[in-house]
Length: 437
Image (tube, rainbow, N blue to C red; front, side, top):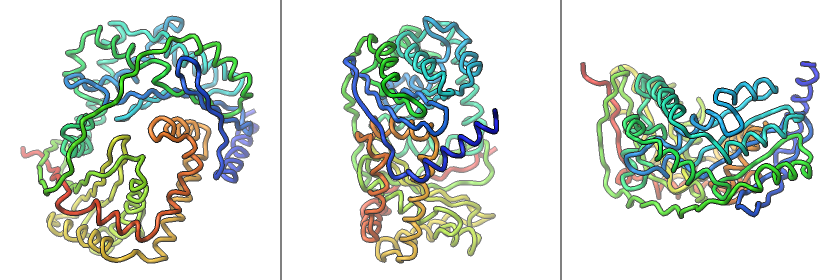
């Protein structure tokens, strides 16, 4: 039995690889506003059911950070028809797996079952949407879970708060400036009624997208969707009018301490456009050119040749409303920050004044072709991409078209983006250093 399943999975991978340029899907809306996306692929007997809610850390009220991530945990506590503690037992006993994750912009839950349990996955996610239990015992339990997660992943982890330091210094007005995991003090201070109000406000069908991908028969799937989701009442979705930060026009330098590190890190961070903007794709290519692998410009120079850095990277990070381009460097030995900064600035200047070579350009194109294929090499990956492209990018078919955007990026576009976004007066320098004993 196991060999047969593995063989089916291998066939599915080859099929997806060969057809990676065209992911077929169907999408429609229920009367209550729930957006539905179906992707049929009968090459392997598995189905992923996912629901993405348009609520992330940016939707939280000041003083109540961490709610979106908290619900990622809380809504596995149970529903009207799924007893507390039974969710994971139901999934595992029926051959499935499940998970959830939260970002600044959205929360995503999904199950992957053998296709003969597709109906179960649909029912469970409908239960989460219709009648998730938000009570005091669940809140108290999950508070402790989140506290432990924060301790392990951030407070006691070397460089665990580095990314949050970038967010807090790059955004002041926009709620991107607080972390996804939020503040434990905020969660402790919140009353049960506030958690219940959050669920009622954001966990409504017209604030969500349901994606079902894999070994499905679409007409049967639609019947189950209508049965389980069609009668869930529509909610009131408020417009997302977040305050935007003014452009950075003067270089700023800040120092952040971390008691868990011995080697300082230096970050050079620039604000960039939303991931909906074409320039965000261009900046992805700038990032890959500078630090995408051991043959990249910065890695080769600072790590391999000059041995001035233990690690260096240039990262293009896109959100729904804005983005960040951040250089990160860990010095080798006693290498001063000034030497790392000098090399990084030299490479930025080259990008701004000289077209990259045709050979490097073709290498970039090959990298992005490979990334595109890999991102759609599993049913779970396809489901997540479809939901994300619909909800955060405004175009579900980007799953097929995004590679064409990267292909359209020219060497001149790369130069222009470096000129436009990577100037020293547009950045915040963060010295992330050991805490003095």
